[in-house]
Picture (cartoon, one colour):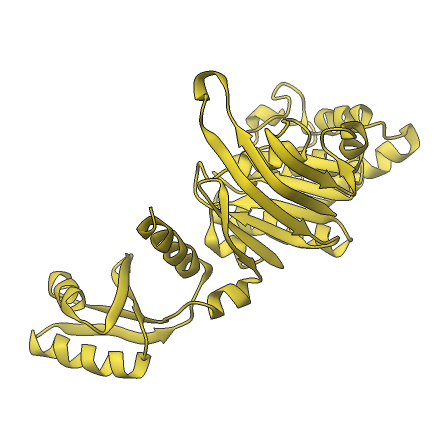
Length: 311
């Protein structure tokens, strides 16, 4: 349903010379929830803008539903819903007026329009806010309204650029529950996100960094491919805990998560035994020590660190 082949993009003007994409190759099957994950500046927005026919690539090919983004942009626009990262609706219009406008703009017939507006209001739980101006909505409600507007013409493909950025955890969860229902209806969803926990909700993901893909696969495949296991530890005083971890040769890598440390080790049982002895030797009080599951955040940090070593 979505395919990019050796896609490059160079910016001009004030950003002249900046290469946003470096040979991007994607192949996304129909009905998938596909995650494009990476930090700010990775090229996620550029990739989605090209697929939405807002931007032409410098070189390479991009196709949606078999249509070329260069030569058949109008056909693509009729089959996609696009939700950019920044709020792009009309703040002075009410919720219902925004939905009506986007229905009209996308050629939804008068008989279908009323039914679809009611369905989208119910779907996004905005029925009680139909007369509220879009500019006065909360961050989460704005995102849900933008999603409802993108779905008004029943697109086959939905392109979402960091849809949950800037919203509270409850709204973020609600938004992803709605997206899961959209995929269940057969819509292909390509979503970009900097949040690694959201990546784990996708069928397939690609990790994008500095314009190129570092790896692709299912979240399960990618976490299983990590060359180490994870141990979490929490002890007091923290300074002694960090010192012990830094000096331990059996710890391959580590990073702080709140008040605990997340350690990469080869043998969790052996590592926890050695670490327990080392912490006891310095009179450190162990509050937590456990073998933890590997996550997409572990995958991302490992891949980025390996990539930086090669520069």
